[in-house]
Amino acid sequence: MTTRSQLFSRAPAWFQLGSSQRSHIPEGLHSWLFETGSLTSRLRALCGAGFRVRLLRQRWLRPFAEESRALRLPPSRLALVREVLLQCDDQPLVLARSIIPADVLRGTQRHLAYLGNRPLGEILFSDPKLKRLRLQLATIENEKWRLDLSNAVDIAQSSNRIWGRRSLYAIAHGNLLVAEFFLPTVLKQKANL
Image (cartoon, rainbow, N blue to C red):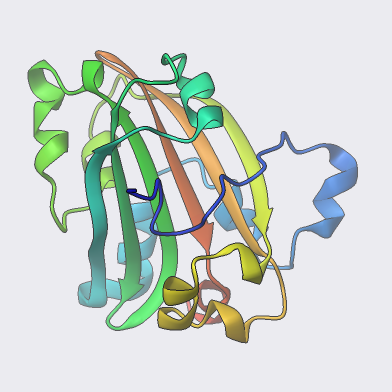
C-alpha cells in the first residue's frame, strides 16, 4: 500500500490561531509562521546561492481526508501530492507538502506538475491573482514524523514540537494547499536581509 505522506504517518491536526495560543509559539518563529510574502524569496535572501529544493516525492495520491475536505474534493479523488525539503546548502530548514488538485493543472498552471527541484512558491507568488484564503497552524511531536525522515533531518534531536503552517490558496483554476513545517535549524540561521 502506498503511504499518503513521506513526512508523517497521520495528517497533522490543523487549527486557527487564537490570541491565547500566540504565547506558545517559540521566540523567533512568529515571523516565519505569519510571513505574508513568498517563503521561497525569504529563504533565498537568507541562503543566497546555497538555497536548494530537494524533491522527496511527487505522485498522484489520495490526500488525507482532512486535506480533501479543505479543498472540497470527493474523498476518493486523487491529487498531485508534492513533498520537498527546503535547505541552505546541506542544512535542512523547511519541510513542505503541497496538494494540487487536477483542476488546477490546466492552462497556464499545467507546468506546476513538472517542477522537479524548482520551488513551487517561486511560481505561485509570480501570479498577481494569487490569494491566500486561509492560514492554519499545527504542531507535530517528534514521534509522529516518519522515522526515516526524522533521522535524515535530525528532527529527533529537537526536544520541541515542530510548528507548521498551512495556506489555502486560490489561483486561476481552483484552490491548492501548501503546508510548511519549520525545522529548529531555520531559527539558527543568520538572516542577511
